[in-house]
Image (cartoon, rainbow over all chains, first blue to last red; front, side, top):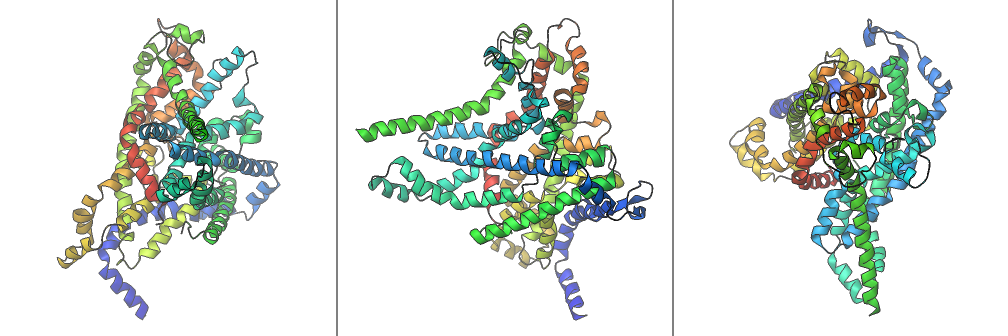
Length: 304
Length: 292
């Protein structure tokens, strides 16, 4: 009772802040938390006429259907493989690029390189993927025109399952390496210059300075970003895959989120789609928590 | 002497690798532009590799003759302006109370907001809710469900927290309420963060396409990105493109060239503002890296 009265007096004291936050709060409730409540659809047979509340319960039917279906192992495997390949190949690139940039002695050259490098991050996913698909077109795409010039047979990249992951990874590196280098470059720039000067006095070569000063100074940044990336592993580029994949490449390209979109929304299986989506969200959540805990243990930086 | 050769080789390698990175990044853009302005004959003969071969504005004429493209472009401008304004208002309103140490429910609201970064209901329930609210097939479907990006709210809060507390004290003594303080004191000092947020939101609104595919059945409401997607990435419209390309005297114009011209038109606003805003972009990234 007393606590309640205290609560009301605090509300009266901070009424103005409560007014300010009411609109954003309403937004979060309606568009973030009501959908979370909508997860009950995973246990229901949704009918639009009856709404979320009125639809009949079906228990674990959708989960059973999903876990026993042939798609289950395929999309889980694809999800992990796409993100692991992407992580392995893309992760070192911005680190190397940032170190290279930091070694540049001409300020203008550094600026130009940096400005150019994150231009691909700015353009839309549709434009970026439209470029990829046009360049790889078997008849008139530049890459295949070049292949033919070199006397090779053109490759239909977008319709062959074994090419999907390379295309995804390489285009992803092109889109993101410059942007991801920003943080590393900032970390390198903040290293005390005296360290380098002292090393030069001791006769260290440039490579030695990179190995013994630059790299150790950005290790914590590297570790944190690696861990955050691992935590976000299931958030593979949904929009990107939707734009890139074709039925011919589903075998390697179809991931959990694209499957949810196709089965759940395009084919109107709301209950089933919600169930598979929930499976995705839960694993995602666990990964983020686990890796964030790990980040906090290894260094004292974490997301929260 | 030895050290000098070593240095020379070292810098040669470093500058060379960076040059390679620049070329790899920019080549696709240059190629697209070159293709779009080359003579149709050269494009058909596959003669364009780097610089334009011949010159023709035919592809652009075709693009600008298309009423649908004008309409889609207008839609994109509308979405970008309206949605970004909404984003800014809601994000600042959400971040400000969380940056005030005196606010008793600060932790509670912060928790509620941040939790959504880690867990969500999934696309199907989200879709059902947006429909239920009556936004399906209206312009507002691209605005209201996306009002706040939590990460941007956190960045905004971090910035507002860095403003000195003394600013507020005199205002408090005058008995001004927080609404007035936000409007009169905080906002004028927050131009930088507002520029960063406007940039982040503006670009993502201009570039966005999936929400339109999800919620807008009416193609008259589609933004340029969706039009572009249909032309570039869905085989369905290729034939329509073909007849469009070959109207009248431009029988030689290939769909490929039209596609490249369209890519340029759709990216133009971004490319034009890019050199000016790039600096704010870095600033925003750095703000985001600070712990909130």
